[in-house]
Picture 1 (tube, each protein chain N blue to C red):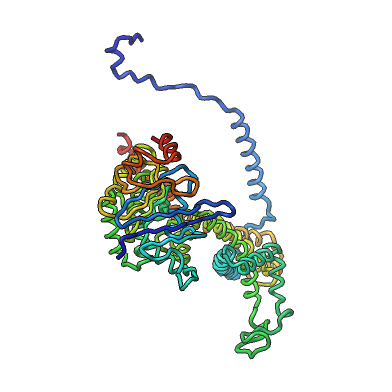
Picture 2 (picture 1 turned 45 degrees about the vertical axis):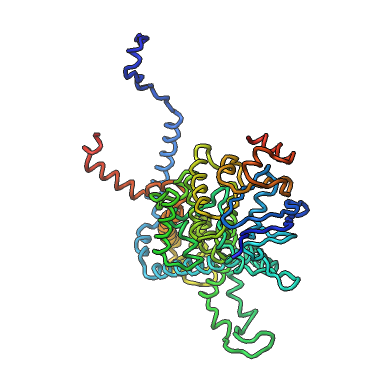
Length: 315
Length: 254
């Protein structure tokens, strides 16, 4: 096409759209075929191996004992995380305190609780009565006692489990909260100071809300991790999800189907928590990105609307 | 009511063994606009930060509105002020930063209304109404719902000015307010600052904008190596600098 004349050049001379032949990727097809084959083998074996005991699985999936165990697992997770988060914020603020003694106490706490296995801590709390047979509230160093009771009566296995999980979690949460606080730009504190805000106001209104963006994702991970860690308290006979199915299979000897019952419930619970985490992160991302991406639900709705009304897309 | 808003006498400031301010003595009268100029590292910003006690001075005396900054004098001894007292005094001094330092998790409107609500305990709707008016005054009446990340640098800095004004300060400190801005956005910020100056606000401005200093300042002061080398009326000082170091600096920036 000869378009040398000025008149031709001034026309709309947008070049032709590129329609090239795409590069073939045979390697991808081979990989997909191999993976598909392996998955088919696995599915076939799961479906045909009678020892999976899918009938037993179905019988016990909604068993009241399993349900009670699940509820207890969720309770343990929630209470331990609340203790962990409150303790974590406290320890983080203490660690950043200008008072060296306060800071050191926080450091030592984290050192001890993070440096020892949580299973050992669980056992420790369950045997606390051997260390302190009597627990009481009163004036220390031999003063009068106001209230008290035997350790075995006060610290049931459930309380021991809560204490072990919550106090251990506090150590991890404090590091997460501290990282969040440190991540907030120094200029934010200065600007707030220049406006006349006090230390406490700056922490509550300016620093912590911004630190949340850094704190939430790992806290979500911690919650999911906690849900699974609660299974460890089965060793001190707290009838949470794992111990509940253990109690059942210790009688009927159908270990595999019952462990699958527990596994599936753990997966369902962690899935729900993951969805919650996604929306929570979105909530605290305000102001960080120019515009938030759509949620999967919003995308799905838009897709359905486009399907229902294809004429709308024609333009 | 004293005529002098800020008085500095032999102000010294050390960071470790490095002395940044080596005896600053100057006065800023009510409604005066003082521009602090000088090469980077000369101590301009540090001096500004001493005025609202973001930095504590090591020697000398510093008064704002006849009250000692950061200390209380009883006889010959100085007592440090408690955090709450320092905070209360800061409410009377507005500060604008080079990097804006807007609160990114709040809308422009909430940035402006935050301190009146939190510090002054104003009612939320009243504070928001006042904030809306202030945003209008800096030309951003329609951007109240925007988050800082959705605003240009010049708009962010104008929100920051409105945020400082919300506390109705008697003194405004500007720490290189246009240095982080793209050249085409500098003008809109300087316009707002010029308007404030005309309205009679007492201002101390650390800046490299000679044009602004020439137009808006009542006094310009050149700092170099922690001391005020030369101070005077902008016209005379720019056209006929007396000091060699001032001449050297001006020849580099003009």
